[in-house]
Image 1: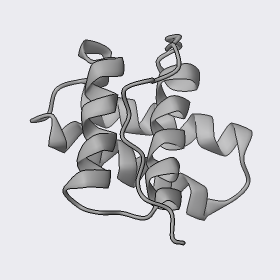
Image 2: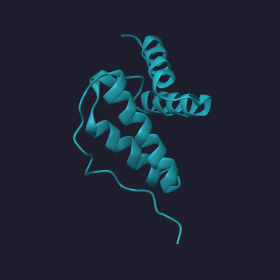
Image 3: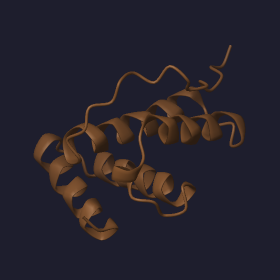
Image 4: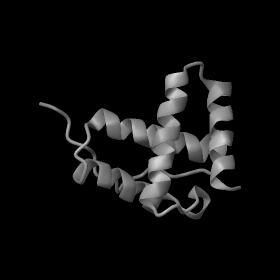
Length: 101
């Protein structure tokens, strides 16, 4: 499954499950960012370690809000669970973004 086909499959799955265009756009943007962060490796070749590295990068290097990091995590979990049909154990090694006080 090539990258373009992957994103088409993801779009189709989102449209089947959700009714908002914004969810579709946001999830696809996060999957693209994930793929580019890992030098265009296909998500099937990656797993929990790569997801953890990406989310940690968002929190530590990009200093994103906790809600933004959670949005990225949701997009990736959707990709693995509903598009790639792969089960992932809960990610214990993720560094969470700091929540505002």
